[in-house]
Image (cartoon, rainbow over all chains, first blue to last red; front, side, top):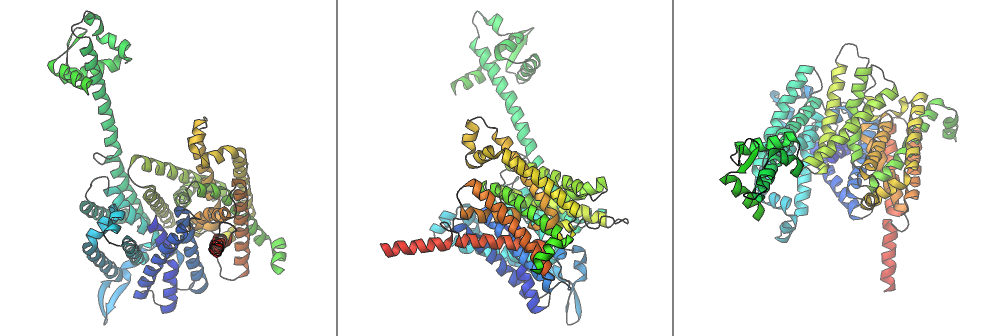
Length: 337
Length: 295
């Protein structure tokens, strides 16, 4: 949620820098945005530390206030220039190719490409440089602090990087898509992997997939590119949430179901074991009796017996059940544990 | 004085001020519960999630009647909330990430639908995008009546369920042990919050609505330790910010109402955190100083 807060809260920083430079492509804008991002985080921490305001309320208090300042500044001083609130909030990727970077009169390609490329390069460099420190501070901040890493400095550094990324993406895609792209791919990736390095790689891959699918969707519907990308981010997350092996919703449901049958077979094996070789065996070990004794419905009893037969746990002669070697072993094992 | 005069006699200004007043009061009341229940950020997610509902309601119904759009917004906000609960329950995502995820995806969906509509030849959808930033100036008398009706409904429900809400907010465990239906009550509080948010969309817009819930409640919390007083104060602060912001934005040129109202509410919150007796920072500093002198 912090990234959402930052993506809104850096607006006044951008506006002020723009008013000072009168140039939307000035690198000062990126710096100002980074500084405002850090300011946002500090304000939230400051408010939180007073103990008067809960942390989530502090976030919810700070960023709308800063965003409002930005909107008011735009409305009052910059209303007649390119910088309007819609563009900030929603972005317009379709125009990105038209904003070219020219050097000495030579057209070098779209400006966003260079800006985002530079930010990507910076991030990869920072990530490689501080990988170990970030990893430690993420998973065990107390230990990181104990061995002399400064988790607070890392935290603010990370947030500054987030701010720079957000502002880089800002004029291309707007502040909402930034959040979708920052949150959805890692959220989807965490269903699949446990290692941090694999997690980072997979979420980058999901991010690329999101962008490509979203763009295709926008082309097909002739709708907002930013919006379509957010939708495709949501779709990728939903697929992961439902279908991921092991941790997905469907996998969990299947697992629970098979465990239920497994448990029923074990119950059956124990029941048959208890009465094995005793006089009442003829009476107790009948399929029909299971309904009464274990409270199973006729269909359920039949299904459990069928599964147990398939696995070679029980043998069946007419209505009478008896345990196989494997069935005896299973029943004994379950009784002893 | 001229401001007061125009408040009484200028139709547009009176409408806007009344609308903002109702909105501020209602969101102050429900925001108190949100802040106390540590659900402050839910409001932000719900208000963003309402956007696709608004657009879909327009696509299906074809009218811009405020009640139809509100219904769409409330439905979408509600669906968003349920999805949020499902994701938090069935995955290891933190609530925080789930909030941001749903917020951006739903908002993106709304945006996609909106632009999809806009690029079709019959562009009768004009005006839907005022829900992004809100447009207090566009409030009509009929809007205000709808606002007041829904607002009154919300207040009556809160009063009727006051005791239960109080117990569920402060001690859900005890509430469950004496046989209250905690989950149903929690959902009811959330549902009312969704309603309040939907009320505010037209006036302050999707982005700033969450602040209308949080700021008055945070401010009120600093002045008292009693729920009843806190809710009353929050309503008062919300109403003050609403009317004050609306008036200021009409008096000063090029000052949009939504952000002004939010800034007003934030200023009240800041003032309270600093200066409220007993809890405020200044007060605490003074007490610490006195203790030092005494010892």
